[in-house]
Amino acid sequence: MPTRWLGALIPAVLVIIWELLWHIESLRMDSLSRPLDVAVALYHGLTDGTLLVATVETFEAALLGFLIAAVMGLFAGVVLGLMPWLERVVGPSIDAMRPVPSVALIPLALMIFGFGVRMEASVVAFACLWPILIVTISAVRSVDPSLLNVARVLEMTAWQRMVKIVLPAALARIAVGLQLALAISLVVAVTVEIVLNPRGLGHGMMSAQQAMRFDQMYAQLLWIGVVGWGLSAGSQALINICSPAYRAQRTKERT
Amino acid sequence: MLYNDLHERAGALHAAHSDMPAIRVHGLGMAFGEGATSRMVIKDMDLSVAAGEFLCIVGASGCGKTTLLRLLAGLARPTAGRVDFYGKSVTAPSRERAIVFQDYSRALLPWRTVAGNIALALETCGLPKAQHSQRIAQLAATMGLSHAIDQYPSQLSGGMQQRVQIARCLAQDPTLLLMDEPFGALDAITRQGLQDEVAHLAEAHGTTVVFITHDLEEAIYLGDRVIVLASNPGRILKEIPVNIPRPRHQLTTREDPRFLALRHELFGLLEGH
Image 1 (cartoon, chains in turn purple, brown):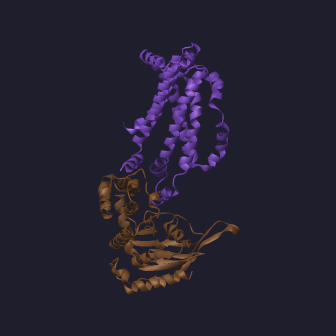
Image 2: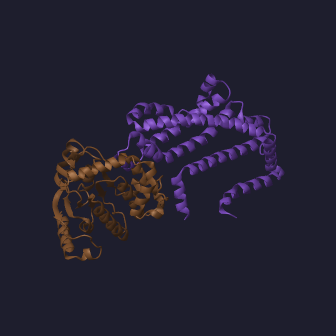
Image 3: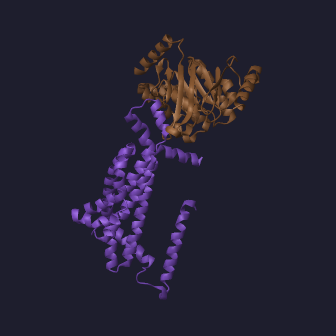
């Protein structure tokens, strides 16, 4: 068995124990569905399309919010990273807004946008903006000074320095910030749906719980886990494809 | 075309000033910090380097060697005196003065291949894109990098990475090559190989070289002249011409009585400080 499947060992054992415990009458609980029922609910959810529709709804809001945050965060981050004096002006305001829990903005967002994708995306964007902004500022600022010396000796223009040195040098770290924000986007989108937005996976889970359909609730919980894992694996794959230096590092490690 | 123009102008410059020193340093001083905490790193230094000369500078660490090189490159401005390059005051870095940094791992772009790193210098020199690959191939061959042209710096050994940096510096077609302890981090065998290659390249192209090292033997082996610096503040202790004919040889030159005599003299000078 390839070693990369070893990680599946613990979940598999837990599911088996859970299934076995269900057969012991005295331990049986209504709120803890039988794994087999959960699997059946997941299968039905996927085949009748309800789960997929909810997934698309959640992704729509999560990715829209992420995209808005990425554009704003990257632009502002590069500008602030290159202009320390401007960062001194804006920095305290950023530090004051950053600790505000994104969920606390739901009432405000609801007031502005009403129910729906725009309200959800705005809350997601707020949550995603900070990691992208902070990481971009620090990435641009921590470009190795010796690379900047190379740029000076080669008499590069400001534009050449930006495109050939600063951005590529900062990209690896910026990608980490984007990846972090992408994970946050899903968490916040589902949270907003659970709290009040009547759409998506979060809302689906709340409805199932209120209807005492715990098998469906677990199925959706499981599905959110799968989707989240897929999202992070997908973004990592994208980063690998886009990063030749990373590929070089990997080939070096393998040889 | 711009590139060719530059080339011609550089040539004309050389012809016109063949008797003019490449570098002339007058009363150079450099202090870091201000007021009471100010520290004098270089004080009242006068020095000139002839066109085509291979000058080595040795000194204990903290004698301002690297600062001096940064001043010659134009990466830093002196707090006193001036640096002239072919009669013109140095106020900013220039492509004509290439600098090989000691820390090659931080001077190469890790996201570009060997070819890409060499191309960086060509891109800023205005060489037409069509001629890039030919020039890259030629430079890679010169530095023994032909087989590694598509590899990334992280895949190369330290010696190979330093070769890439030297190739990039040659790509900017410099009249002056400034080298800051370029082989300090390399093993002895690699270092000797690169010493011979740099000596050969400088001689073949008539490039002026200012080479900083803390290795006395390296200084004598490579230099037409060795300058010994004293520290606190950095100043010239002694200038010693090296009258050993070229081409030099790693084994025989180092056994030459003249070589050994110079080594004794330099060792004594540095010991006394």
